[in-house]
Length: 218
Figure: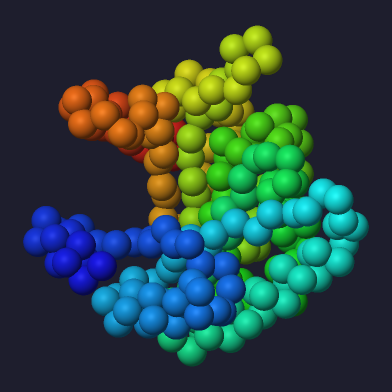
């Protein structure tokens, strides 16, 4: 991590948000060591690993369990000076997918201590018409915006360039009218990320999507 932060600084960049595998305080996740290192390097926020429901068990007690794990984590991160953010992700067993369960769990916390990476792509997949309601429910905790574009091919979900899918364009007007001033992360995953030969195409797609998002938010 130190080498990556140094490389970013050498190019006038910084690590705005760190993606992590952390969602609890534990030796297994090396929670304190990883987050202390990140905080010492000036990283201000990290995206948490997801919680997942066991669909064979009652849901409400599991939300209570996730809330307890969040409480321990926030106690540590507040002391270290680094903020956890939780991303809503679509899927049948993702905590936070419906938004309302995440909002319920966060009610015990101050938004300055823990936030949400609101992903309009996944919010659209889970609630194409209900995203304004879900956005409003979680708005006070939104720290970061994740932007990606879902598209349906018959009954198959796919992802594509910003502006060419099913995300409601009025979402961007909603953000513009709000007081949001946090980071915006544009996700360009639809071309793949394992073949080195496609790097030029991916970089071009990033430039195109970044410009599109910038135009939608300004």
